[in-house]
Image (tube, rainbow, N blue to C red; front, side, top):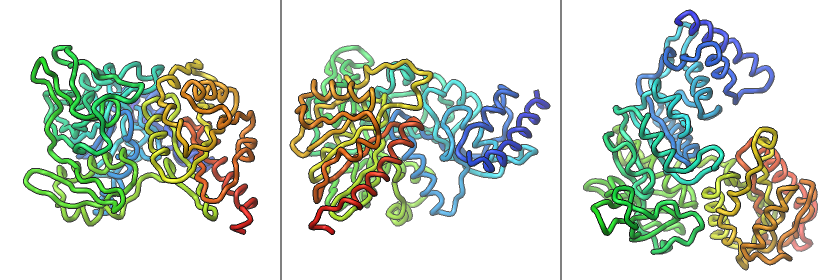
Length: 462
């Protein structure tokens, strides 16, 4: 087996320069090749002495990248998979880059984003010292079944030595792997929280201990909030670290820990990224960094811009937004964020999962779990839907109560660009899916829209 392992390592190493020559830098091919030659490759490849893992349904990529950036600011270069996949082949590719041809490790510390479904293939061989679990929620039914299944899967395979950093506001994941050491992070009650679930997805209504109905003290979204059982002692955990006094105007919040409180900068206006930021601060404190050092450096890191970025054209803005098709939970949060932004808006939906059409069944059930009702809003002036799948979106939008004259269907991507109404101060949101086909299309069309607006500026802005 050792001979097979070194053959796999050698061939995987040789494939890397070939991939660079052909322009395929962000790929899990070396790891896939190594696993085909040596199925136990992850067992034998040497790992860094300390490993930080990040998993969860939503937010793991942003949190992992924030962690990598923050550690770099402290002078720590990490082995990571930010340019590859987060399944076993992607982890293998990262580890291949982290060792010499003789399997000698090059890095002391690794930050690995790990797909929650891949626990059974990764955790028997990769043992994180710390692992952030951002949340567990409903994802693609074809990939993830139900979040309870993912919770069971993670709980079964998370190594016992791993200290968990858990979202105390996520009742689905906060009690995962109860035998492991843990710390909790979260955000105290906000003025916008409610008592009842206002969303179509409501996956945690029953106490996981005694199966009686849970009573929510407040809800932020679906199963995100604080709850207790009136029949037994189950309740949301107490925070170890948390945010409070969130002020999006000043972009500051109060950060509480054991026996201290300080004010921290908010690095992004979206609430989901405040959770990611607090998870990062919690991790850095666990790693032994001082609070004042963290506070000083956190202002200088940025959330991944490819997921929610904008370009100004005169008084208009074109937003490029990851919509994460097939994931009703994440998609709903994106619409919630868009509606919460100031100004009038037009949306173009390129969330057609184009790269998956050849090998996935065309299951559209997820769009009926998505809160399209949020888009029934006076500030939403037009929604442009695209292609064959666009007709499904149109039906769903009509069922959500969106006026038909606000919905425009086009068959060609370039038609979507010319279908926008050019108006001063308008905000245009180009949404794309997570698969490569939709990502490429969405980002290209966002650029095309910017150029189209530049050529057709309103007279008062010329």
